[in-house]
Figure 1 (cartoon, rainbow, N blue to C red):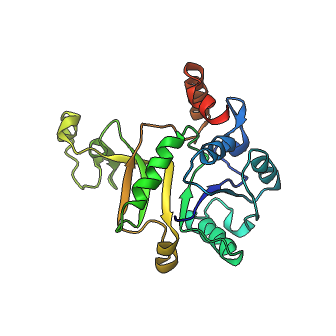
Figure 2: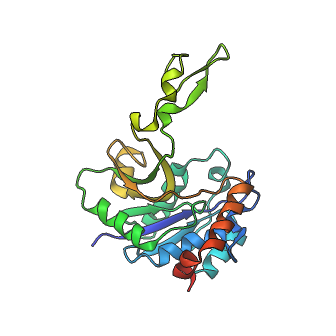
Length: 241
């Protein structure tokens, strides 16, 4: 049996939505939704929150997560990378004789998760001998091939192309390849791969396709999530009952 640790990043100081990781959603802080989903996923052995805030640490512990260390300020800024906090966490775990085989990277900004799907994702990754990581995605409602960029001359051009002839982009969406968006539902990372390559995901990443989910980046996202909860309390009951 491999050892699996869920790692939830929750730094303070969000600028887009101030304090979003501890903002109330359906009566619980945003961070608590991710903690609850991890605690109810049987394949996960420990749930650890990586934060630079004593306030966030106290809140995380009150919902059942571990916060055995605080993240240093130098890797807690707007430009800090996922690799920074994952490596910091792995180094602490190794120094304390508890380095896992797998890291389940869970972003608080995607709060509505089904523990059964998380269980399925971990099992799917474990069955692959060649995969370097797993990332959750959902199908985009509109193919990215129908998107545009603005060129250096100020005209629209097809995404990833120098062509400014846009008529083909009006073709039916069924005529374009399906494209997928990473959604933060669950990423599964291999400790041995991270250690040997200095990368989180590598070049053989399994896709795990989930239902379409909402990530919190704006006030409108919060409002939409509250609206979803008003339509159904199933996920809330599953995580907090």
